[in-house]
Image (tube, rainbow, N blue to C red):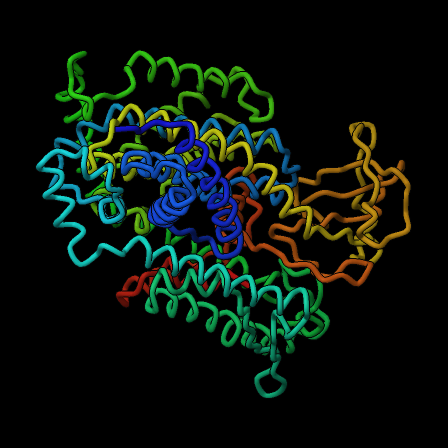
Length: 626
């Protein structure tokens, strides 16, 4: 039966890119993604059925499985990229294309290779113990949509199993495809009417006056966010909304109430009197840090809650790996992996690349490479097992990333690596481990699907390696494009910067002009200054003249605050809540630049919610998001 075919690889890779792009958009907007395997499988079945009516041979169940395997990598890598890489800009550095692509490729491939030795232990030996809910559901979809050729070539046992799976579900794939394309069409029409035809406001907002001064209610009626809310369910969506209620209807008006009594006094970390601030200004100056503290605490609490499961999973995974690692050359097709020689050589090659490329600030850094291997294997093992027990949607990848960054930064602090370049080093380690853990969990779900439909593990592993590499290549340009499309160049005069804010131009060699779409008639080339501290002015990218005086502040599209360009064009900003959290952890530990009082308020909010029996992470994300 055809399995690893060129058309399956091509279709799966293309779908992986599409779902990777949409997942990246979502994780930048709300810090969440949704599993791509089942939608990719449904689209694959439908697409090949349509092509078969035009004379092309219909795909077998194994080909459709290869499509969903290759296509699933895009979503998991996009999550890791969106959670970590935008923190580079928040730390004051450029979001370089090569850096993003390297982290995505190295982390994605490393996660797959580290998971392969665990396949037999977790997927085969633990069958019936580890459920792998998304992988099992995807297998049911593939069985229900199996072609006539697949059914004819299947064994008697497989035929009976497929008949059982398809009973009452023979049109499940068709129905799912119609629903997916209907949702796509509705979203397209709605977005076109809103953004292109300006049929209604994208962000209708009501700001209240006395006695509820500066409280506000806003609505972002986005089809993408509506879809995410439908998938995560009304309870979690309501809890996230409750976080927004606390931020905009409790914290902001409360800060405004007490701030009015301060008169012209400036309360740090704000830079203007609270009485002169609007709701968004108060949110950016104060509530943002409260939300970040709540998100950090929620992630750590979710990780600690999972510690018994993590310990059990790690211990069981290592034990089973020792007992089930040998593979006979005469193993049946359905039990053949890529050779361990290839896997080990691949891991060694990837680690060598990590230590070579200067963009990662890990050149010759044996300690950094060692931490990537140690934390990577630890959390790939944990992630692969947890997805089998609780599913991909509940897998605490963010908590694992927070733990990696905390441990990494504390090690750096002990050995004295606290300079600005150490920020990038710590983030590179955390990002690669995050992407590896995310993709390791996805790989285990895919291999479970393959196990249930009789696929060849080696072919699936080849497919997801190709899909991961291709998706990683395009996610970098997409991330930079999303950021550039919403970047605003703010004249420094509008920021009232103190005279002390000045760059040492002897260290600045890069020059840049203001893009024409900004609507600023200025063609002068300015020096680029990456300010990495918060002294006297926000960190970030500035364009300065030859005397080192800032002329423009480059407000990024991701985590930026300025929404209107000089041309009058309004742009959408991406809050990137989890990336912001990662930057705060790095800065907070390595140079102690955080307003810890506000952060600890957020921590206490998360603890209070956990004591009340509510999931603090979902609520905390609602507090943080604008």
